[in-house]
Image 1 (cartoon, rainbow, N blue to C red):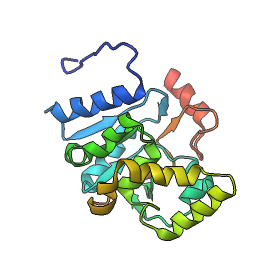
Image 2 (image 1 turned 90 degrees about the vertical axis):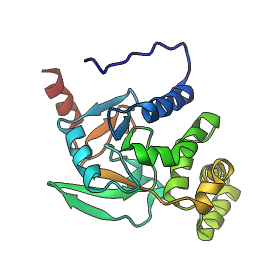
Image 3 (image 1 turned 30 degrees about the vertical axis):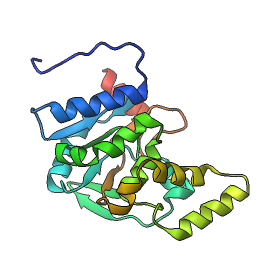
Length: 211
């Protein structure tokens, strides 16, 4: 269409292109809703309509992912209470982090720009989302639990907290809290073989898209 803009790039890399997306999306005047899309996802029909209707009803400080991540059910970091909401025959649950495929408002992106730009400076996606959702990062119990785990030789959790504090201390201490919403069942899946969203026959979904 007339609004399609193709940007040819050299090998900029994931972090560099993510920073460019932020700048371009904040400059555009076509929509107050913006979407970041990684290139290895499969979407179910009506996914974007459903996400847009949801965020229009819950716009304040909301980040909406189409991906019901398998980690939400298996990873120890995510074994914390969540909120649930039912809207238009779909369940939505809060999450403490997600991947870099998500929908939000231009206003929310403007307020969180510096946090997201920390990804280009070596921050991890999970760590920047922890700074936004305030998950674990202000909980002394989490710190000591992850420190104990690190002393046992598994330092992944502690590194996530350190990364979050190293890159976004002001957001953690003074910033607003943001909420990530994820649909159940998933509206999209990451196409990594060990990262497929549960509860959906994705092989069948793919066949319908090919027809």
